[in-house]
Image 1 (cartoon, helix red, strand yellow):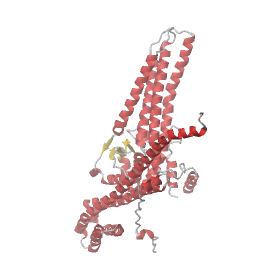
Image 2 (cartoon, rainbow over the protein chains, first blue to last red):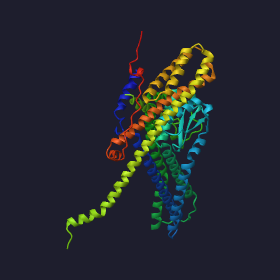
Image 3 (cartoon, rainbow over the protein chains, first blue to last red):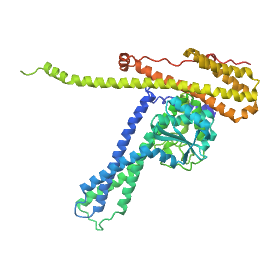
Image 4 (spheres, one colour):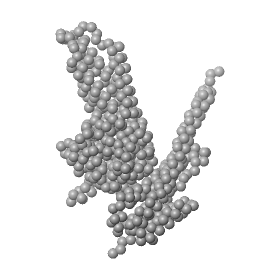
Length: 341
Length: 194
């Protein structure tokens, strides 16, 4: 009964699987991904600068509310602009070169050598050969939870990490599938994209938060007036606060949307490498059955992992919503199995 | 004299023709470099297959020695492996080598099947390590071939597709052959006996 149910479900989904026309190759997608990375970083960088400018304006309006003289200082705005550009460029450069290492240490991943786990090393090397990439460094996270992720800035500087729990649980072909999923992320340059986007989202959240706090504690004249200028200042202030609240949410939504799309693509890429959809499907159902919470994962790093490390009310089976970092696992399994036909 | 439409067009053509030519030339250079890159990738992919095949030749003597210690009287199987290895190394043409490699794969499988009957051998750490390495090397050979074929497929597509086929024809980029070497056994449907 359950089996036939699942089958009909699979058939429902096969119709919308050909999201890409058949003549689009993985290499087109990789090129597209690199372009998107640049566009997104520039776009989000501009957003940071705009937010900083707007909120600086808001603060000026706030501080100046009630005073007679013009509080909007052009040099102040220019200064805020320069400072934010510097921070954006600095943070993205730092994250480009150091982000991978930082993410690994946040996740508590330690590098291992071939003698520690020859099978894992061999499996990663096999998939690297299939992808024609240099071998990434291999890391292990000492956690019972089942998860894995990849990071780095490009295939020459990449790392894969797996929890000890998942390592113990998977059979060889499943392990191969999981590693192929991670190497697909490396091959597609998702690791760079997600790292840079995460940095930008972090900056936006930070900037908005800082500005809201400054606005909260900033000194202002005690006497409020209802003069014309005061009205305009109040509107600017309200708009700036609105922006400071909405911008981080919007930025996160963009980040989650990217992350979900990348997961489907990495699943397809993994099957392209192993030519074994069953392996990935069975690995994913093992991952779906896991109810252990990951200790060293948080909302900022959740999108990196092969399955969402943060459990919600429904366990690992997350809802198909705009706020999800991953698509529902059942949906992923159905799309993978559709490749066998 | 007021210039007519013809003169204006001619002037325009004179100005833009060199620019257009430069643009086309740059475009051609881009395509050419792309083809060169793909050709090098094909060669690297081919070399990777050899690396893995050599790795297998290197592992086999160790394996044979280890098995001898526990299952010395499985002479036929051991000799078949050693012979197949030598044949593969000595093969001169790609066709011969392919056949020999298949023989070797079969002989190794036979050896591992036979070793199932020797619990002491199976528990030997050295043997387990060698078995893992050989299984993995077998996979690596398969994946290296797959990667070679994927790369060749991209290269050949580029050689045939317009407009890169013009550049490919001009500079004699020849399409490459796929690594097609199916095992005879794999071609036949599996026999089921009751």
